[in-house]
Image 1 (cartoon, rainbow, N blue to C red):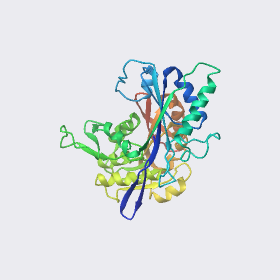
Image 2: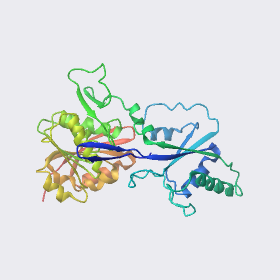
Image 3: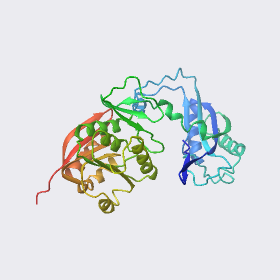
Image 4: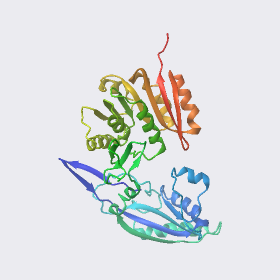
Length: 365
């Protein structure tokens, strides 16, 4: 999906409204895959398919949702949607949508290629394929949109929810639910362009473990902080200090802003842009000591090498909570933890995801 850019000048924040050309290819479910291959050949790496074909059990699991998909009966129709940048955008260094056109047959860049020419060339490519197998030449429509139509659309489905019996995650734009109790811990969160709302299984697994092990003396290291939800939860549950890292500068900014929304002062939380796998010695100098708990909700392929670095940041018997691990990667992560002198205390699961709570072990020489 296209991405809106934010930049700051002084104390004011400005939003750059981006314009995009939206293309809809009206075809059949039978021809959708072939047309998708044609779009890929043009360099259109990202497109959306809308149809009424029922999802397979495997596809439903991949959605990571308990909401049944009521898509109605299959009518054989399919719409492929993609975007290109429209001429006239003020900022040129925008984030890629995955739909850039780089095919040599196109005249000029996506912004300078008239939609009518692009549509004609896609249809001509489809006509050329008719000599090999039957495929209908679809109707292709386009319109110009700005991101104000959909940039906040995702917020409609992000509602307050309980992670545990007394921890409520609430989007900043939503009101407190009537069911709130006096002793509930409320976390105000605005993910913005950073990942992490607490709704995904991997985040829930981390939050549940943190709730169990946090004390008033806990110093926490959050490696890959995203929106800062894990560190903020830990601090609201009583932890004394959180040191947060992320390779994405928007995540660092979002973490600090979300901490302020939850009335957490700068003396209790620090966030920096850094890659712990490449800059561990520099980070070690900045974090002013070791930590009682380190948490990483990333991916198995990152946790495996991270397990060889994270121990140097932990106190004696410190805990490493890792999540973002698909079950098929579980054994690889487990072996990496054991190899790097961690003892597995807990293995927790939600859906197809696994989380480990591991304790640092002393190395006997």
